[in-house]
Length: 323
Image (tube, rainbow, N blue to C red; front, side, top):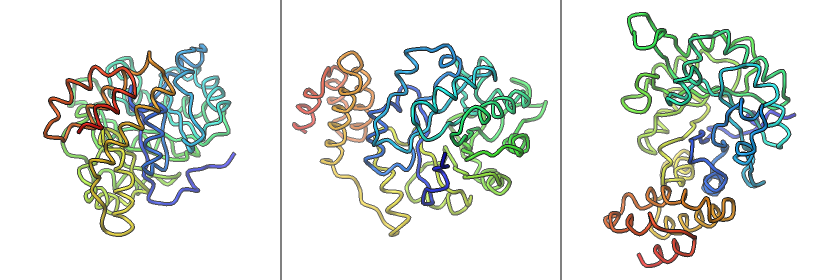
């Protein structure tokens, strides 16, 4: 099976999984605005192993979403072979292994970034996954975490330890969030560390994550770190056009601000796509996206009151067509 990562034009502008955000409708919107790769919401290897119908439903996608990657999480290596085979059977393009999530429901149970405290298990997960699928396998992690929970005096486990541990494996790509477990989403990104990690990782594609400030700063960070691309996450909330703006700036040195009409059209399109994929029962999930779309508007407060009550795409159209 072809390694799609190697066929992409650099720099690669991708997006990473976000729970409750990166469903099929959102992925289609990101592709519409130029995303090179999209990820599903991260899914439990355990749930797939035990044939969870709810989890399998999360992995439905449209042909237009290719290349699409499924990210797996979990701390038991024995769950991954069956999970990997199920993912491969779906016709997706790759598998990503989560060794970076700081969320309590994942890391709090020893998964995500906390797995780095047990590097033997990390290696077993990677080995069993690669052995169980023909799909390219990538991994995601963070810059570091305390070796002992809550005790920084005991030293840190770093992305460099992670790269050393996995040097023997044919990884397709490495995505590194430039912050630590202890400072998951705020504070400066360790650009020097990302640059060193890029130099050290020789197996495959290297993407940075977590460093978005502005379109201009992203291009500057890509040049500084010598990364093959960037994986966008929370910066995309209400701004899926960032893919196009970044690409335009790389190619021409300038980019166009998005018009109010383009924002309205995107929000309405998003609402229809979510309705098509999840119907009336799932449409409430659209409300959080709509709030992101209007966040920067001077009339955002009054719009929020209307948007938190929408129940179908037609109501969304009616509200946006009035502003």
